[in-house]
Length: 124
Image (cartoon, rainbow, N blue to C red; front, side, top):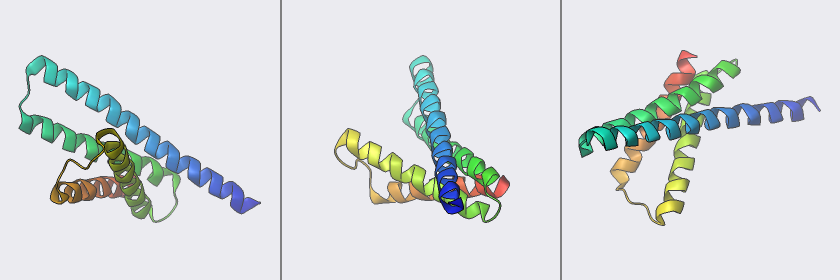
């Protein structure tokens, strides 16, 4: 019985971490779109903004799960970063019906998400 309760609470912590990450992502992307509209940002600044959003969102998800876990916080942060990336790719594929980026950009995004989550877990 005790293991079932622990599994449910672990699932809730993981879902909470991912939910916060995606709420931060959504709000940040809306803010970036507003900045694009107001200031007519070039492609480079938009790319930097998106990269920062991915890193900050996965960092906060890793930080939240790291606060909840007693040990191996960096591994839990990496798991949240990986989960964040996987959901991001699934949603992107569902919307676009194809992968619109090359493998180098996908690998770089993967490393940024995992690194952000790991750093968040380590600093929690």
